[in-house]
Image 1 (cartoon, rainbow, N blue to C red):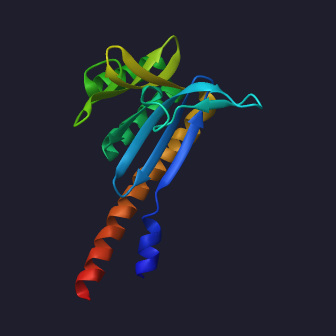
Image 2: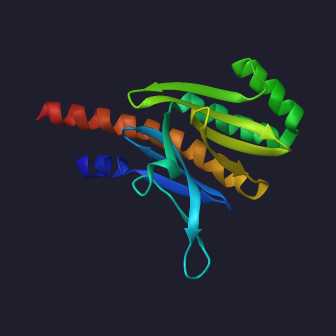
Length: 175
């Protein structure tokens, strides 16, 4: 039983790419994390390389999100691609009081803002750490369904992880 519960605690990670940046979404027992990394060069075969955390601090940024924030992002991606920009702005205004979705995070390393915005008819996921430093990932129509499905999956997975941790604690306490 313990081995089955420990298997549920294995982190889940997916990466999504476009020409200028990449989005890594991960779920672990520690939380749900979004990381945006800039394209920083090309391989010998011409594929983009990305500045994931650890290579150059300026080329990547990570933010930890709550399940409700993740579900709000998923819902607004769906609204944008099924009902259009005006519906997106109406729902964002209902949720955040603005025509875009925005969550503010105060951290030990500095304040971060994650936002979902429409600009020139495209949907952008942004992580900002200052007025001068913002990393963006364009959510294209071809990727939006995969991103939405994964966001729903990782929220469900987080609940399973939390249940597994409680079960492990209970089983350990009984011994």
